[in-house]
Image (cartoon, rainbow, N blue to C red; front, side, top):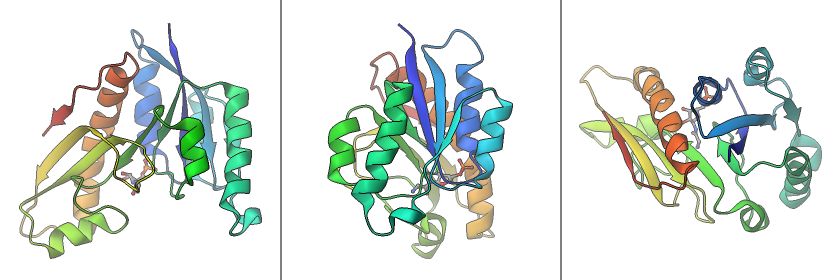
Length: 198
Ligand code: GAR
């Protein structure tokens, strides 16, 4: 049976577009049912609409520090779309244990580092400062530990001597766009074999 996928974004949504395009390309075990943003003017919302995917906004700002209330509204909106899988794609909110309890086991995230290295922010700069020879991105299952769930796929690139955080981010993004759809295709049929790209 086709799996229903909701994608959560906060920004430009290029990974969301890659996921939706792959699901819409035919012969796919999943279908996109909702793109939800916590940022009302996120660029990805118009892109989702152009792709014919329903969109929703739950602005986190009116909730202030009350993460639980924000997430309760996110869950209410998600439940109306009845997703089997949530893909976090540049969704820049830390999630509480309550959200994990509700959606755990169904949630994927893409992170711009070779996890377990560089959890959190500023991953490209940190890889450069560490003098790493390679960098990459990871798709992992979301658990209560920030960027710490089981890794389902990784893509790698060599760091060049003249790379900056910006050039690394720009070179990594096309790899993210290949990796995330490849992992989702497997995850949607219950296959957790790790995807390795380079
Ligand atoms: C991507 O590079 C993604 O890996 C990163 O945000 C960007 C979103 O771009 N995610 C994180 O940093 C999560 N901690 P997009 O909106 O164009 O997909």
